[in-house]
Amino acid sequence: MSMGSDMYREQILDHYKNPRNYGELEDPTFSHVGENPMCGDEIKVDVTLAEDGETIEYVSFVGDGCAISQASASLLSQELPGMSLDELEGMDRDDVTEMLGIDISPMRIKCAVLAEKVAQDGAKIYRGEMDLDKTSTED
Ligand code: FES
Image (cartoon, rainbow, N blue to C red; front, top):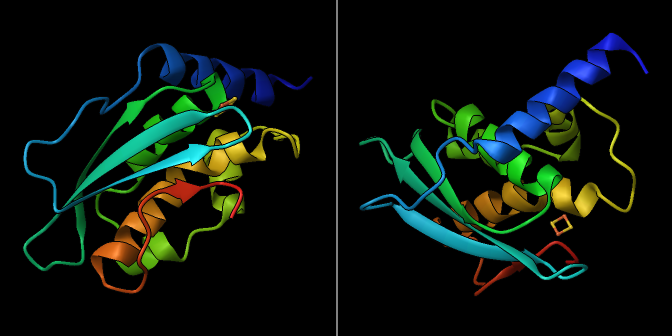
């Protein structure tokens, strides 16, 4: 194991134990919920947009899950502010694994992408591009 990946493992544990932006926003522009049906873990993401209706201003999340899913949500909540909804929708799983900094096994990739998928579907629903009650990492 390289020093680099140790550092990322520390980062994941830190975000898991002290999640950033954990909680609910007072008046979010949109909120969305999703689950990883493999384990039943669920996350809700709240997003507030800037006045331009396109730039992400704040992101928070609540929910339960493993260290990977929680760290990923925490990291994402720091990464997204300043990005546009188009940029969010353009993200893929590589962006998430890059953010986490470790190799994610195929079994755990659903954990890693849960928060991203919830945020992306929330954005699509907000923009009227999609109609969905709850996101699933299986779809
Ligand atoms: Fe449930 Fe990872 S085991 S989200």
